[in-house]
Image (cartoon, rainbow, N blue to C red; front, side, top):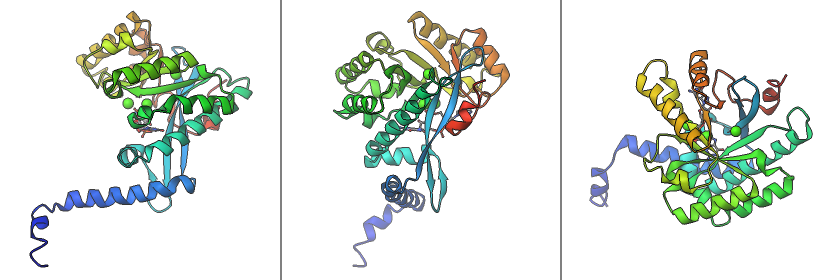
Length: 274
Ligand code: C2E
Ligand code: CA
Ligand code: CA
Ligand code: CA
């Protein structure tokens, strides 16, 4: 028995092991989180060039009983690995629709759109479009109010499947936005082939706009590219007036970031409407 452990000892890496243990703990916790109602959504404002609220992005939060608030960057990858992203993604969709249903009954919030983040594993499910459709029907949502944020990396997997789904979604009236645009794949042919309505400039480019010419030029290029294809362009991670002014001057259509508001409760969000 003493020798049996020899090989495994060679490969033992305490840091890696700690990471694995922690992920295991997270995945156990994630299994319970849905049953115990530990998730909630926050809403971050999206505004137009005049600063008027046009919509929000829904961002998931996990309030763990012992570990406190766990950021999505920490648990979404674990959820993707374990497949738990499927029920979690359903939960997000359902709760986003519930929120949209409430907004539809309020005259001052009727016009708002709500974007949700869709993970690649969720999008790849064969019944993905059906689930969206069922949810829209159940909550009687105007499909135009729901936006799906997809990332470039999910567009390259099974292009025919992706295009079929996108066509079905856009036929329903649902809007598709390309998240983290500029950080993914260099082949842009999908922009021509897919019914995408919006490009979202990644915050890493926005961050350095006023410090680094390359980032500014990249933002300019994305805005021009988007507009030349009749796409709406939104910038994320706008933190300062300077960044907003720069992007507005370059005709960026919409803006999201701490400068306009951090992710917050739905009640807090509506306070931004005068
Ligand atoms: P993302 O989709 O790129 O979301 C933008 C992230 O930037 C959010 O972090 C948001 O809080 C943050 N942010 C917004 N404005 C600013 C700003 O001005 N400055 C800075 N520094 N950050 C800003 P968050 O909420 O921690 O989410 C991180 C990522 O987790 C998201 O990145 C998204 O990929 C993922 N995520 C969040 N909610 C969901 C969800 O419901 N489903 C899935 N599949 N993924 C989600
Ligand atoms: Ca939007
Ligand atoms: Ca997003
Ligand atoms: Ca991003």
